[in-house]
Structures are given as structure tokens and as C-alpha cells.
Image 1 (cartoon, rainbow, N blue to C red):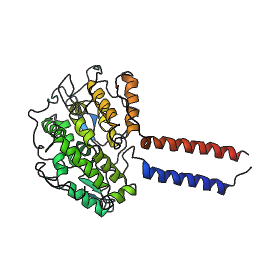
Image 2 (cartoon, rainbow, N blue to C red):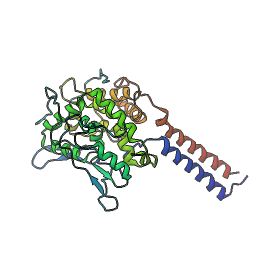
Image 3 (cartoon, rainbow, N blue to C red):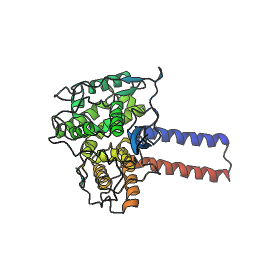
Image 4 (tube, one colour):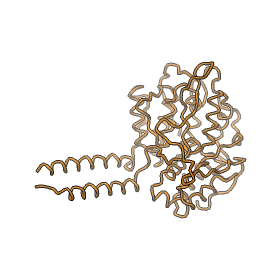
Length: 372
């Protein structure tokens, strides 16, 4: 039997089109595409003139691209809020920390001259000024209705800003990126220390904020807001949706403390001379651990990954496939029991692997037919 070239082309085109439609409707972004929001702060090791090594903050080493500044694909910048306190208003329409018995690794190199401080006491009841604004740089590719909705979210004194999502600061805030850059260059961690303390225990209460973001997650997907952008597979809209859905995951993660030092795990990752542990904090944003990266076998690595693994059973916004892959990578280095919590991999996140197997089978089938 001989298959015509036209017939072969039709089969490949049909399968490719079906797979693409399937991905648009079911999959979540595994990485941050070129039209992404503000770059995620990943520190890199840079030599400092006249002294030893220091840290600087650049774009994520996973291949992110700075947003375009052209007139066609420009950036709409919203002014940062002047305050993060107060009850504020809700959107017009209204997403367990697990301890680890992980052994302590050999001491990791940090800025020994200015180590991060322990959490402030008492916990601040308002965020330090100036408050960084999540979603503060958005692409014109978003629809007008979506831009308007996001504008209401980040309005001063809104419940969104009062609850201050750590998840979206990490992935979508250029203002926060600049604050991280300043802290890593100077070694002054006071501002970030107070900011993290507040994001972990925001006003009016953590439970209230968790519920607020559940309502925002629903409203964000409404057709009157950003539903059309999500349906069209717009990457920046999906990134924002993921950060909203991961609010509670990252709020609780921000409060993880190294039991040996009493310092916030996130600050220690920032202060580390090597950026490897920071990649773990970017997993909920859809970033994978680079093959060249080697996260430390520290108590914080164990705490954070057990935390993420436990949350895969409680939220669909956290990409369980990415978390499971990171767990396997770290346990391969640190021991099979280092991360004891098993991630719950959802069918939605494993479906992309199934699609790949189907395409591979089709390729073999076509090859066999051509030889008849």
C-alpha cells in the first residue's frame, strides 16, 4: 500500500491542529514565554569591584525576555499604591506548612558580612513603603476589559492590595524586582524582611485574604473580565491567573523559616551566592529547574518542596508535574527520603505527556505505511 504525499500531509496537519486545540483548552504554561509579564527575580553571582562576590538580580535564567517597549507592544504601567492598609473594596464580581526532617547540608555560601535578619517582632500590620504593586506592567496584547479589571484589582486600598499576593510579586511585579535588586546589591534586607512578614500574615487576616483570592480567581476568568484572554491562550493572562490561584500556596510558603538560623527561607535563598535555591521558589510560576542547577540539601529546600508537594492535592493552579519533576531531581541528589511528601499529579498536568506519546506513535505508523 502506498500513501500519497497529500494524504500524509492531511494526517499530520489534522493531528497537529487537534493537539494544539487540546493544549489551549487544558494545559497550563510550563515556562514564561516572551510576552510574559514582569521578569521573575533570580539572583546571579557577579564579581563586585574592589571586594568579593556579590549578588545582582537579572532576568530569570530560564530564557525569559524583557517586555517590549515599542509602541505596538508597549507596556502599560500602573502607579504603585500609596498604602496597603484598610479594608478597601472587593472586585465587581467576585483564588499547611509541612515540616521537614531533612538533614542539614554543608554550610552554603552567603553574604557573610550582612546576613539576613530574623523575622520582625511584632509582625507589621501594614506593608512597608513603598508597597510594590503586583501586575504593574502589562502588555497591550491584553483586552481592554481585562486591563480595566486588573486596574480595579491593584487600585490603592483594594482588598487585592491589602492582601498583597507574594505569588504575583515574584512573577509579575517590576517594582518588586527593583526592590530585590537593591537589597541584594546593598545587603540591606530590612525592607524585604518586613514585606515578607506582612505577605505571610496580611490584613485583615490570612483566612480572609485566602477567601478573597478564591473569589478573584473566579472573577478573573469571567468573560466580562479576562475570560476572553484566557480562552485565546494569551500567556500573560494565564500567568496572572496562575499567580492568583497560587495566592495561599505562596502566602504560607513566604513564612517558612530555617530552623537552624531563624531566618526566612526566601531571604536566605536570595542572599545565597549561588542562585540554585531561588529556582525552587519560581516553580509555581511555571519555571522548571535548569539541568545545570543544583539546589542545596538544606532544611529550607526540604521545607519548601514538602510544602509544594502537599499543596498539589489542594490546588489546580500549582503545576503538579513541574513540582514532581523537581522533587525527583532533588531527591536524586539529597536522598530518596529528603522530600517525603509525594506530589499529587493531576490528569490535566500529565495530559501533555500523553499527547507527546500519541504523536510519537503516529510518526511510527506513518513511517511503516510509507514502506509498504
